[in-house]
Length: 120
Image (cartoon, rainbow, N blue to C red; front, side, top):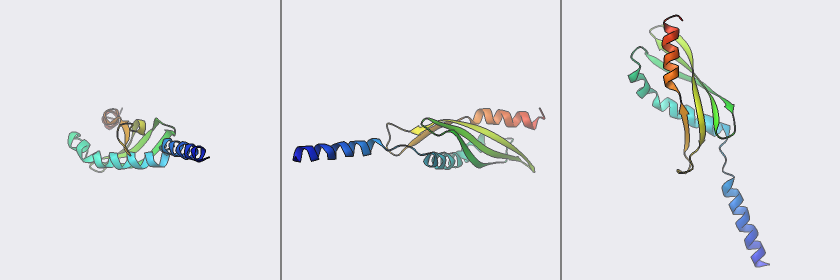
């Protein structure tokens, strides 16, 4: 009987450890915070942009790997443009505990901003 209860306890512990699934809310918080922290580095490389504000993140896929669209506002002087930044591969990092990774496509967003700025 002791062996059976020990086996059940170990099984329950293993199932609980494997159930550490990334929630959409955790993903949104991590991406929004990470991209906000990254903005100063992006802005120093975009000479024709005065400021970028991250407005929201809309997740399109809510199971790992998640993906979504980061809605941003780009400013140059008094002129503003809404630009969408694609965010892919949002998932927990298998090698680092409590770490969430993703890929954001700021290069395409910058290209879209400059094309819009030229009036195309």
